[in-house]
Amino acid sequence: MNVAETILAQLGGNKFRAMTGAKSFVGGSDLLQFDLPRGFAANKATKVRITLDVSDTYTMAFYQWNAKKLDMKQLSEIPGVYADDIRRIFTSETGLDCTLGRAA
Image (cartoon, rainbow, N blue to C red; front, top):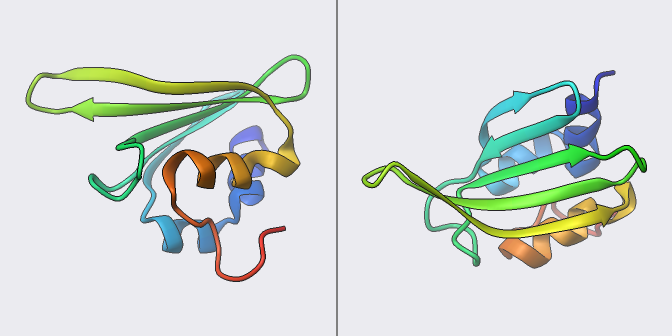
């Protein structure tokens, strides 16, 4: 399993996609990036990038894309996120639940 697949699985896989409306997934050698529907996230994020760091933790970055201005604004960046905390951080930043029921 590559890094992008692992990150998606840690977020909740297909349940995550269904609950958040996330789409346009792009995987790199050390990251997963995806889009969120406009107006859904409490912090107004429309793009999320989760990068695996050399310390075996993740950096989660939240962006707002303005298509009219062709401008990308970084809303927040959280370094040092452990795999167990990815869902919690995503939910606290966006207000979107990753899956139904109790978080793992």
